[in-house]
Image (cartoon, rainbow, N blue to C red; front, side, top):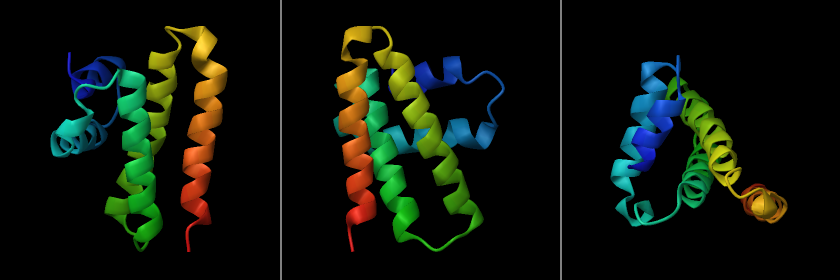
Length: 104
């Protein structure tokens, strides 16, 4: 199952634009296809967060911010299948996303 399909199954009543944005992101990054869901969604969240930080405020950027939030949620939902790894995953994810804020 693709990462986008996995997310769509769990999105319930999510806006169609959000689901499509996730599909577009994963289609644009085939290098993430072989990763486990948790890792792929973490990469997507990091990519989206970088895009938001480098852009001017606008409606399309707002969708990217919403998609980044959804990707973090999905990453941890997928990681919950292996609870023993959640602490380390949280620390690594926090460090990676915090590093984005530290960039000039």
